Length: 363
Image (tube, rainbow, N blue to C red):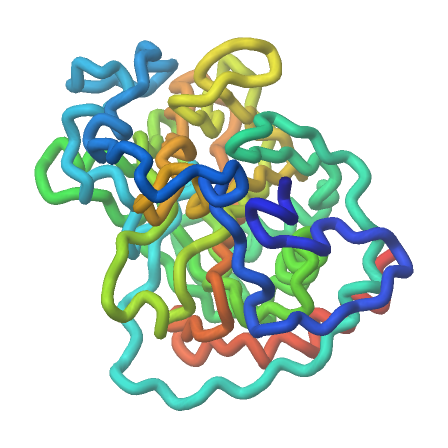
């Protein structure tokens, strides 16, 4: 399914497999589920508001809603649900400032030794259609601690002056009114690609892409007690310049850097999906070192440029929680036209040396 529907033919490829050149930058175009099922173009149209408001589950822990739909979906404007230029991924990440006009061509990234990394061995299927996966051996505990320290400078303070010229922001909200402004309460740090070689190498190795040119800026996000992010989509709203800016977001990757128990909250929840335990909504509890992977833009609904079934939220961290919720997050674009804008002078090519050094010393 990851190959046929989402276009990642080399997902978590076997060790020793020779790297293949992608036919086109960005790989093969993924077919929609509608095309694979052979549906005709005369399929009845579906009202978009009905799709977003189709959830019938009651609000989950820490996710109070003023909407009668129970998930905060049905009565909201489209702009309140699509994380256009704001991201989210259950982690409340933010999009960087708008790029300057007519950016200079990006320097090419040197060949990366990603195939020297071992494939991941602890992958769980949380949902089949749409595909939602957990990767329980993504980061080591030491890597998790290092990424938290990268943002805080090691003191878990508010300085935001970690060692890699990071950019710290209050995570942007989705929407315009006072209710929307309460949807996302967290803090986001943008990192230089060169400062997070483990994340860039492992993310690319998992999805089987040969380089890092398609990744947006890496981020870490902190949720303190009571902080959350309500229902949203990670896919970007259609626009005239989306294709020139790297295209749609085709994959969301979240890496949990701290542990939170079920009672402590902080889970990533998918409103309209049922988990392997038969309970709805599907929940992924923060487990230190585990990653969550899903695909926000390849659904089976004709004429909809994103998969509305991936509507998700970051559950509030409980007041009694013993730890903040920390995640690292990345989004992968359709092609290599994405131009990073944060922190200043952040360039994909600058990370090649650090990534190859990591790959060479990795077990």
